[in-house]
Image 1 (cartoon, rainbow, N blue to C red):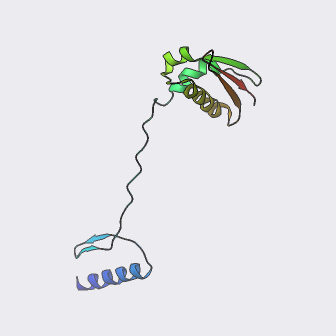
Image 2: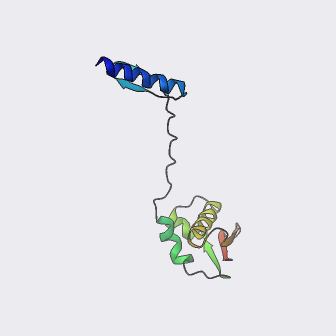
Image 3: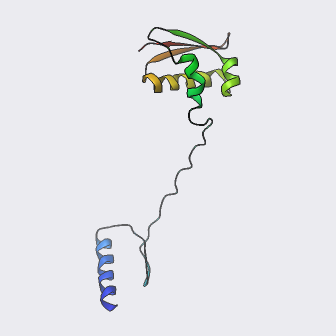
Length: 122
């Protein structure tokens, strides 16, 4: 047992000389100081996975390059519980970027008619 303690002390000395941060619990006690960062809290999702796909695929799924689709906010608000027109526009853009790639579409929010006009450009 005495030889194990000698090897243990040498190992601690090596770790200290290398500048390592550690925390060891052994039969001889606790050694070293190691403070772990608290993990960042994860953001709660507003909608479950796959919901945007269910909402937008029937409306925007068949878009070809050059197609323009007008999406009505009130109709989408009932289905997807969108809080505002900009939120709907961002969700549409995010979904199209996922489906066709970043920069594949452009959109314009029409506040007067409460619609989002979407054009696929790539």
